[in-house]
Every structure is written in structure tokens, then in C-alpha cells.
Length: 73
Length: 197
Image (cartoon, rainbow over all chains, first blue to last red; front, side, top):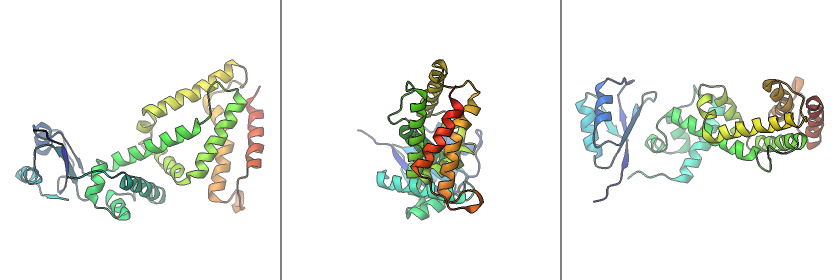
């Protein structure tokens, strides 16, 4: 079955990232995440995730499990 | 699914340019921009990763438009006087038609975004073309040898000073000012005298 990569946008409380922090490691190594970025300068610390298979709910659960708030925008 | 909309993208760029010119980078934010465009912040993030990404893309877009406009009907092989006059005409036409873009590019040029934007492909080609034009003029003995920065300030300084007066509508001491084609030609004639052997 063909899949299309979709872009999901979330409001979070993730602060400035370092290469070793859990959020960075988890998102960078996740097999089902093609691309991600966080705008830590923005008041909403907006997270963008591109994935062909994950749902917004599963991404929220992933971020919540890392101890951060996450709401789809 | 979230999709891109090119009309919306154009509106975003136009509003971003307006806000950067008005408030500078410090007063500029993705939230403010989204509000001005009547779109959600989420939509804005479909187009751009963050504020830096947005500023870089705007800078590149203005730079590419400026480049395309500046080289219209121009060739680095042109005789020096003819080529420089074409440059003056093209640069003036762009500044007069797109004053906000020019003002925004000025803000970007005086920021840390400058180097990255200037290195992008098309702008690098532009620099090569301008360099070639000067080298040809020097080889053909149509230009007095001088350091590059001095050349640039003599060759384009008078034009940009007049364009700035025109944009502000005022010259020295607040005197009302409008740039006319005759005045541009007068300034060009004085400039070419300083540059030709």
C-alpha cells in the first residue's frame, strides 16, 4: 500500500534542545519519523513532525511519555 | 491532511516583508505574522520550520528577484559605459517598483542571515557575472584600475543615494525630492567620468 508523508504541527513546552537530550534522541532515531523540528524561540515551542504512518495521537503520546506537554495545533 | 496553498504563501511573504521593515527582526514573530495573515500559527509552520527558515527564504526570494531584474538585457560582455548604464536602469527600476522588498533586503543584509543568503546558488552566479563585467572593462581599458570596494562605491553609490532620497521623498535638510530620469542621467555622466580612463 502506498503511503504519503504528512506534516503534523503541535504546541509543546519543549525548551532549547541539546543533541543528547531525550526528545532529540527519541525523535531522531524513530523509524517512523521522516523529519522533525522544534521552534524553541516561539512562544508555543512549535513541534513539526513528518511521518507517513504515525497519527497525531501517537506523536502526542510519545512526547507526553518524555515528560512534555503536547497539543495538536 | 495539511496542504500548501500558493496564494496563502504569497500573502505570508508579503506580510512578513511588511513586518520586518516596520519592526525589524526583534519585533517580528511567527505568532504576529499568523495574526496579520488571518491564518493559524499551525498553517504558518506548514510552510516554514521556524522564524530563521522564514527569514532565509524571504531573503533568498528577494535576492533572486533582484538578480533576475538586474541582469535583464545585460551582459558582462557589454562595453563598460553601456553595461553600467543598463545596471543603473535595472537597479533603479527594481528599487522604484519594489521599495518594501529593497528595504527588507537592507535589514537582512545587516544581519547574521546575510552570509548564508549571499552564498546561495543564484546569488553566487550574480557575483561572478558582476566580477566578469569589471574584469572585461579592465582588460579593454575602459575602466580605471581601482580596488573593488572603491569601484563599487563610485559606480553605484550616487545611484543608491538618489534612490534613498527618492524613497524618503526628501534630500539634504528635508528638502522635497523626486528622482527624475534627467537627474539620473546627470549623476551617471558624472560617475562615468570618474571611472573611465
